[in-house]
Amino acid sequence: MRIFTRSATEISYPLKVYAFHSVTGDLASSLIQKTASDEAILHLEEGNYLIVALAGSDECNVPEKPTMTSIINLPKSNILSTPLQMGSAAVYVTQNTTVNITLYNQVAAIDLTLSDIPTDATSVSTSLSHLHENISLDGNYSGNTTTTIKLKKENEVWRAPLFYTLPGSGSKLTLSITTISPSGTQTYGYTHNETLEANTPYSIVGSFTKGFSVNGAITLAGWNEPKEINFLFGEVNVDSEGSDVEDSNDFTLGAIPEVGTLWDEHLIAALPETTEEDVELLLLSTTEWAGVTSAFHTETADMATSIVEAYTENGIDGWKIPTRDEARLINYAIGGDKIDETNQKLNTYGIPTLSIGEDMESGSKIRYLCDDANYSFNWDDISISKCGSKRTYHLRAVKRIRVKIDSDKTK
Image (cartoon, rainbow, N blue to C red; front, top):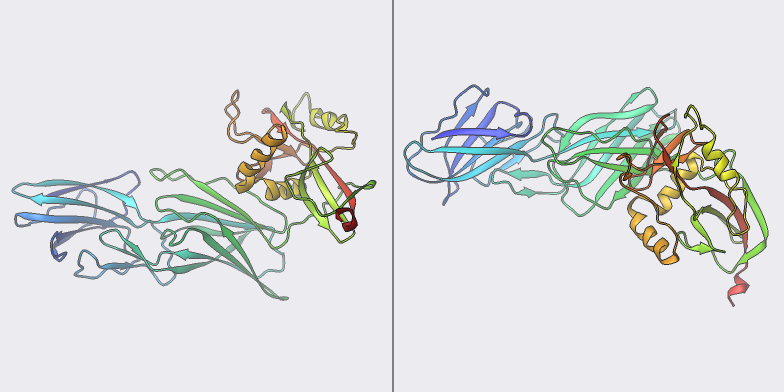
């Protein structure tokens, strides 16, 4: 029987090919194809077989004489430097049978970056929990394990080289970040409400205390669409330097309001600080502007500043372009995986929804200005990046105001 293999991604040779009896699952024959130019021919008696092709398994432990259900064990670290690929075909062998097998990546590809780590940190590692531990030759995943990888510091960013691991064993992915410094060891946790999927590249980007810095999702030829996982660990920096908080003696609330609701017809986008006596509201304008240029535009660099300085909403003025910290804070509170819920509320209130996806006219991803129109962010995957000089952006203004809390008002 002649065997041809193909893959949308590069095949990691040597390629191992196994023929199992379909009824018993026992090994009938096998071969190792060292290069793409080598012929792959198995001599088999007439009958039904499952043919399995396996590539990228040099770092794994595969039994010398496996059965159809034998387990492929990953290294103790559960990490691979090359993707594990596998494909199979059920075939009835007669004289001069040919079989074509397509290989698929059985692992997820991970690009991991952490920023804003305290400067005195000497070691940083990340653990990914609820991942499969094994895969059998008939393609079934099993086990539940945690993958831990150490990061290396590059300039001011801690990064792990691109690595591969088996997909998730549960419905969610849990990350634990451990930093070691002279002052001690600190561990922070984050739960992502989706699991890792096979044949999918992930860009996992986290930031300590200051939000997100996204280096873009990796794209691998032949893999599924890339996904980004962006997250905070530590504490959000809510006391942005230079931000103006206005004290209001005219308003008293009976209880702390909910993010995403209206206060005096203004949208509450975050609650940076709350006490028993008062609460600081970070308001987001109910008006949205599109086609706004950044501070780097050669002709209209002050366009965004002029818009917000002239803006008044229901008797309140003094609105500003969000700082980067404020953009991170409101994005964390009402964006990301909360964006659909937020937009449903805005529809109910009759307020224009927050824009995500691509701009209909330009085809560019919709981004909102922040940091004096020097940077921009988007709502759906929580990323902040420096603005360009030619494209245009969306804009919503913010206003910070502190109001009193009086529980007697609810009685």
